[in-house]
Amino acid sequence: MYTRSLFWVSAVILGSLWFSGCMTNESPADESNGVATTEQAVSSDGPFASVNDLVNFWSNTSTGNAATEIFVNGHREFFRSGFGPEFLKQYFACAGGSIYASCPTGFFDGFSTFSALVSRSPSTATIDKDGTLFRTGTNQFEFENITTCSGEQSLNGLVQYFKVTSYTSGFVPYSSSCYP
Image (cartoon, rainbow, N blue to C red; front, side, top):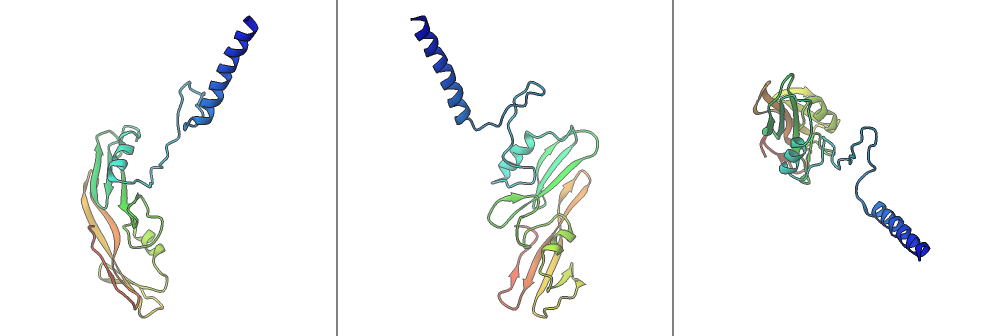
């Protein structure tokens, strides 16, 4: 009877360990400091399904006690007070609806830097930046106007980003504004 009970207890323990190991969604525990951790499914660059998801991410992510401001398309969506240099990050609502720090494809979404937008633009297009010729393209029918867009005020000043506000390729013209 004792042998059968011991076998039964061993089978239950081993079975529960096997079952829980196969069914968990968590990554292995970090034993270095005695605290179990799980990997976050989303990186700080996105994708985020909504502004609420982005705000929740930054509400639960440390920036080392720095004042933290998060902007989406130039609008401040999250603020946390703090000390030292400000942590500011810009995001953009990309084609397809997800929110990224840098949209993964195309050149019609917003960009934090002018050079990042130009690097995504067709190399054959003539580019005007804020009404001034920046680059002469090789295709006389392809023209792109990039606008420096002003967002809301941050702790460091006015937030700026860059966006294609008009594009013509000889077919259907595209037009947009700084604000979605």
